[in-house]
Length: 118
Image 1 (tube, rainbow, N blue to C red):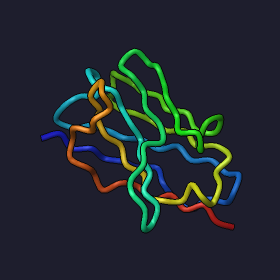
Image 2 (cartoon, helix red, strand yellow):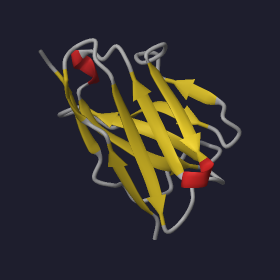
Image 3 (cartoon, rainbow, N blue to C red):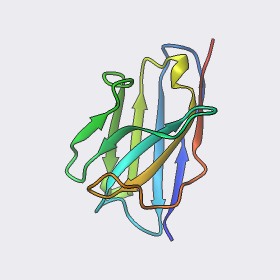
């Protein structure tokens, strides 16, 4: 079973940056789209960024121009570079492998907590 391990979260001041990583063990990201989700306290998990197998990207309006998703196929890893962080970016960030229709197909990992606060 594919295990997804997210890392890189932490506490950062508004305007700061973080880089999240997601590694897939036992399987590979290479044949699937990769997605980063955010779940704030008391809300549903939402997709904030997606990257296709050929590198095409899609972002939620709330993070456009600030977040960048990328992938390293050799390492079966998907990254999320987050710049210009805002308090509303606070939440637990999860990654997943996605079908071409955008359906997450792996079991959810533990996620990584991002807290933006002064």
